[in-house]
Picture 1 (tube, rainbow, N blue to C red):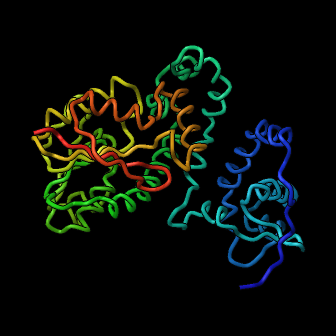
Picture 2 (picture 1 turned 90 degrees about the vertical axis):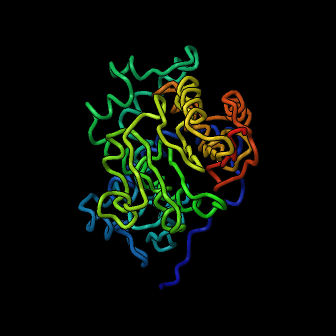
Length: 348
């Protein structure tokens, strides 16, 4: 690999006024990351340094605006510019590649979809009212809008959630102690990457995936008929807020207790109704306190307020909901910098 020399970075930290100016132009940064992801710049740049002109030719775009775009994102550590004016990858720019195992390309697109640019300027209204502004903007609820009016956004959402779920599933499978567990239920588990990972790791185990019918239609191929794990997996299309018709040794609930308090209470109540005494319940959530990812999770918290009127939890608020449901709360452990696992049991 070619050795390159990077341009020196400023040695002194910005003054408060400069920091605030940078924050004020945060939309420009988000837009630049989105454009970089949409154009596929990270995929076009290989292991060797390349000029903006070379990349523009590969992407079919104009070289001068592309150079301006790359100069902007390079200020934030996405790519780096060499002294001779070429660009090289950085750890962050590689995360915008489709082929990176930890790719954030679709997450970056999802968080900057067109509807977000309409919703963010109404944040003051959401703070005043305490509720979503989405219906006022688009005439319908968030998920109805996605699936009825914004098919491309729905596709981006599905790709982003799949990517995120696959990545966190790897961490979760390594974290969970499955001693004494022969049956596991992934409640609201999306396409079932967590339960599939557990069944692969533990050949004696059986698993159930429960989520909305339109979600489980696209379940992990390993779980579906003909898949490598199908003989040990059950897929149920249903709404955990209405019923959880599953008995298991371990229930996993990941990132679904953030829409609103009523949904949270109904879901936990249904777990308690389904589970036998002594069953384990592991709840995995982003939290907005005491975590290295607070800038990210507090931003997601505000986005939830805007689009569905939901909220990310603090440790205290989530523990309170669990105890109200009758669960006995045990150890709380980080899964990764973005997620915490709350170990609970159903009282005997």
